[in-house]
Length: 134
Picture 1 (tube, rainbow, N blue to C red):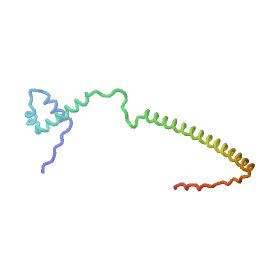
Picture 2 (picture 1 turned 90 degrees about the horizontal axis):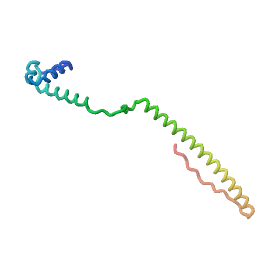
Picture 3 (picture 1 turned 30 degrees about the horizontal axis):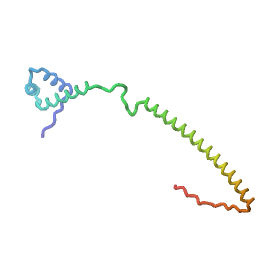
Picture 4 (picture 1 turned 120 degrees about the vertical axis):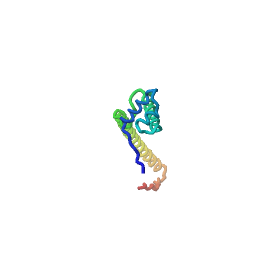
């Protein structure tokens, strides 16, 4: 049973530096160091990819992360503003409902007076209320 050999990053870098010399072949380094040439080629490709990725243009400005404290603070401030606006709107709606109920009471009273003057008897019709789920 063969065991897999692990190589340190320092060892890999030593080999990558050695093959950077165009006069020395990968096969020669592989024989000297006792490492398969295909493995050295893999390390070379990985190093090239890492260097290429490192020098790719980076987006300007701050990185957008979920845990950016300024964004969290800004979001929280927005939520608080929405809550305050919702409370104000609810208060306006409650006032409007009270005014409407008061006007309805006045209209019902006038209707009762008018019906009495005309000799009619008002009958209040009760509608069944829907039960709330829960």
